Length: 374
Ligand SMILES: *Cc1c(COP(=O)(O)O)cnc(C)c1O
Image (cartoon, rainbow, N blue to C red):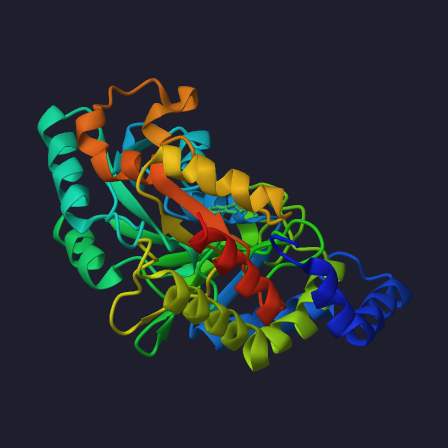
């Protein structure tokens, strides 16, 4: 069994994807070819944003977002403690200090109360300027933007939505990638919408920010003259090939993949909910199920489950075994475990099961059978 079955997806879309690849190679327009603009337009329309600026990866999308806000040395950027390293690394690369917040144990997403507590802590210390908050739509469910954005507004913070895992999710009629000032996503192959290499995108409704992002991704070039530079940028563009591959993949995602993966998640929840803490989706929220993550009783139970599943050739992954406040890379700032109790619980109890739109009913049944037999 595959944790994510990229091969099954390719076989389902082979004709369209092969044709797209052939067209790009035939045109020799490898950088910023017409498929890039076409994809950006479709993505912006799908998520309900005015502008989409594609780039080289989700990490670069975060770096570009941080650069677009001029966050850097002396600034505090608030990030959940339980997420992939890039959510915080992008701020640190620009010289800003990531300040971690605890999470809600049932959704795995940023706790608005902990965010406010950490903002006040930074203000009391008086060393850093609270600048921005990076909300993360972890495992596919949008962060609780209803509660987080008012906190950010109260303290004058910009909001960056890290929707690397959240693409396709929604809160009522608003889609992931439409929350906050700037949103980012990743097209890393196993994300909800993945390409065949690295890729990412930044979204915004602000025209000036969109222009700035377009310049930043092309070494800070000015709009009129390629060799005239007013700002410092990086080189981070989405290859035309990747954009062309994403066009039919986005279509399949909208037409059936997102629905299929939601059906799979619902099946898991129905079968497993009596024995385990299955992932909670808040009322009015929809997840894109980048991961389906259960909470075991403790690390011991998780080890047993993982081993039993492995014996039957069922892959599982622990996302994330180490909280960010305990990563050596961030050891410059003093963090107290007591501020991160939920995050630490999650890191010792969470277990992610195989889930993707092409998972067969028999496979999902076998996963549940095995888990329930333990
Ligand atoms: C994958 C991921 C990223 C980084 O995306 P890449 O395309 O791999 O650089 C950032 N944040 C989160 C939450 C992710 O899951």
